[in-house]
Amino acid sequence: MNAILLAGATWLHLLATVTVIGLYLVMFWAVTPAVMAAPERAGVLVETYRRTKPLVLGSWLIFVVTGIGLMLLNPSYLGIGRFENTWSILMLVKHLVVLAMILMTGFTDVCPAIGMMRPLETALVRDDSTRLQAVLRTLHTREGITMALGALVLLLTAAATVS
Image (tube, rainbow, N blue to C red; front, side):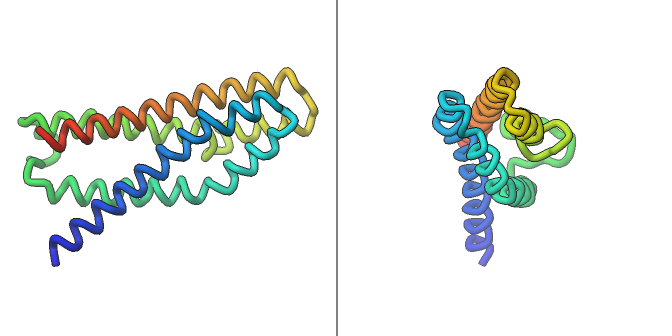
């Protein structure tokens, strides 16, 4: 039974990871550049982020909950603040990167006060093409940073797995 629970938690953790990283990968490489080439379609970008927001938030919740559980069950886990093996050090770095990635998610689309959707919608409503292009460039940069952080999380996970 423990093996089934561990496999299920690992699967959910990986699914949540792939969901968030995959979303930002697609947005960075395909959707945002397509909208930058045709700014009149920026409404599609706003709608895409609006529709994916629950998916991202749910994935982060699953990622954090399963990640804590998997960490506590790992035999290499020595306790809070104990970094006496390679795995613990890699997990510390990974968790700092995950925190940065969560913050970038807020800076991109989740948090209305600091996210890019409100400025994007404002530029659309005001039909301000100069502001719209600037917002799109900033959004694209933030998506790229989030995607790069996600790739680093995967690298640190792989390194911790073989340590």
